[in-house]
Length: 336
Ligand code: ADP
Ligand code: MG
Image 1 (tube, rainbow, N blue to C red):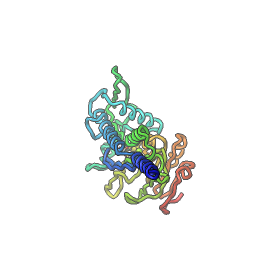
Image 2: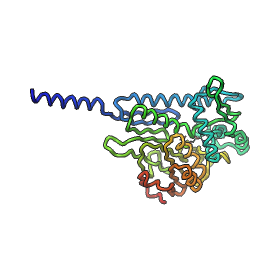
Image 3: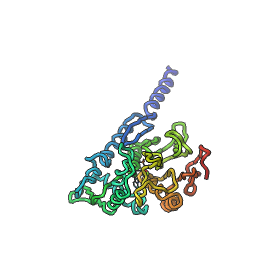
Image 4: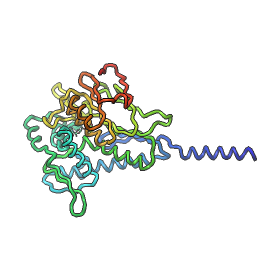
C-alpha cells in the first residue's frame, strides 16, 4: 500500500500534465487569396479554428473582389454613403492616415489602377499611358471619407475612387489573430499570412521562432537570411509576388502612385518589423516605393525596423537591425 500511493500520485500528476500541457495545433488554409499557416501551442484546436473564422469574416468585409463586402459596395458605381463595419472603418481610417504619413507612397485609393494591371488574374496586362493617366486622375485618398451616421453605424464614401486595401488587410488580420491568441492565454505560436508573419513566445524546446527572408531572385522556398521573432509582426513586399512578363519585361504588383507603374526604386524586396501588423504591412509597401535611402530615414523616424534588398543584392537595414533580430545572411551572394 505504501508503494501504491506514491505510484498513484505520480500517475495522476503525469495525467494532469498531459491533459493541460499544450501541443502544436497546426492548420493550413487558403483565405484572402493567400496561404495561411498556423502553429499554435494549445490544448485543443479551438483557437486555430477561431482564427480561421476571424480571417473569413475580415475577407467578407474588406475584399475588393467580393461585391457584397464593404469595399465591394463602396467601389460600386454611383453610390453615396455606404454602411460599413467598424472594423472596415478602422482599417480605412488607418490607411488614409498612413497615406498622409508616407507622403502618398502608400495609397488606398489605387484600386482603379491596380485593377487595370490585373495582377494575379487571367487578365494581367500593361495598361496604356492614357488609360493610366485617366485612372490616376481618379485616384485620391482625400476623396475617401469615414464617419458615423445618426445610428452610430460607420459609413464611408469613396467619392468615385476605387478603394484597394490589399496592402494593409493581411497585416490588420494578423493584429486580430494576435489579439485572439492573447485573449486565449496562448503563450507560444507562429502565424503566417502571405507575406506577413507574427510569432510570440518560444518553441517547446525553449528556442526562439526563426523566420526566413525570401530570396527575391530565387524560388518559392529559397531564403537569403533568417532572423528571430518574438511578439512582433514582420511583413515583406517583394517583386516576386503576383507579377507577369509582357514583351520581355517583368511587371509586379507594387505600384508607384505617382506613375501608376510598378515602383522602380532599385529594390527587389523590403521587410518591415514592428509591434503593429497593419503598420508592418503598410510600411513594407510604402518603403518599397520610397527606395532604400528615403526608406531608411522614414523607418527610423517612425521607429520601425526595416531591411531592404536591392536589385544588385545589397542588404541595407535600419540601425541595430542585425543585433535586434539575430539576422544571419545565409546566401553569400548578398552583401552589405
Ligand atoms: P501582398 O499583398 O502580396 O502581401 P503588399 O503588402 O506589398 O503585398 O501589397 C501589395 C498590394 O497592395 C497590391 O496587390 C495592390 O493591391 C496594393 N498596392 C500596390 N501598390 C500600392 C501602393 N503604392 N499603395 C497601396 N496599395 C498598393
Ligand atoms: Mg504591404
